[in-house]
Image (cartoon, rainbow, N blue to C red):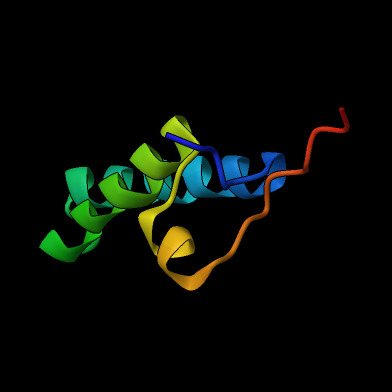
Amino acid sequence: MTRNIGGIDRILRIIVGLVLIGLAATGTVGLWGWIGVVPLVTGLVGTCPAYKLLGMNTCPMKKG
């Protein structure tokens, strides 16, 4: 898989995912909080299928 998520984007996705999962686990928010798994996984993997469909890329290009 080609990475299409840059550093800041990855960090924000991981943080948001962990916060949503934590809120769902503690019962602060409803079951919808488990949607936090999606940004967490995409942040950890570094690839977002939606970005690919939309032609977006926040990952800096390597100069070669």
